Image (cartoon, rainbow, N blue to C red; front, top):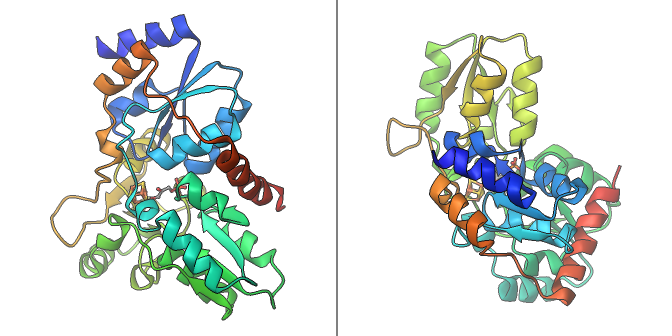
Length: 305
Ligand code: 13P
Ligand code: SF4
């Protein structure tokens, strides 16, 4: 019933729903496009639709608005934040940046629009390595806000001149190393796929490290039939849909038997989507100076080939 109402309203208003892989199954089922954080924002830009409803967390909807200011971008639950973005307040980041004026600032897209405006070039978990490698080796870098992604890139590149902001994601920090090792022992043929927001000791257990889109692609291309999935549980919906013959085992957190969930992503419900479509609020609105500065850092990322 709710789903039908949403589909009817979408048609009536010419609205398109973009949803991140971490949203609930119900939400994913009413989406027109599913994707990782950056792919969805780029999709928002390409779409010929007057209204974009972003079923994801706040920074993702903001990024879509940065890239397509002429469109109405709706966010069903503006309180759906992100612990990683929140671990990097813009005022603190501005002070940090001032201490290292000769450094190039690279920021993960999981940041507020204000932090993006203080950034030279953004990156995602897919392209972080490519972005850092595009900066001359002798040029020092500030990498924020994820110390885990930054630490991983620093290790892979051997780049000592990278200063890390001390932020992290509360979901990806909580996977249990012991339980992952236990799963690997009981499923010796399984491949372990890990999001780089996890701490180094978890990443070391991985056969593949990458973004949500990268993990999905790897699981399709790999000959393996079983995968231990070390990222937020919502991604299992798309994994099982795309590859029904394969087995996906969610990695457990330190706290409970269940896999980790992002409480922010799960705030988005069918009810909130319907209400948002009906009232065409809340809408993402950005200060134009900040938006333009943030856009430069995203454009700089997109231009790195
Ligand atoms: P992706 O860009 O890989 O979709 O990741 C977004 C995110 O929030 C991971 O926690
Ligand atoms: Fe943010 Fe972590 Fe949720 Fe991703 S999983 S949206 S990084 S809080």
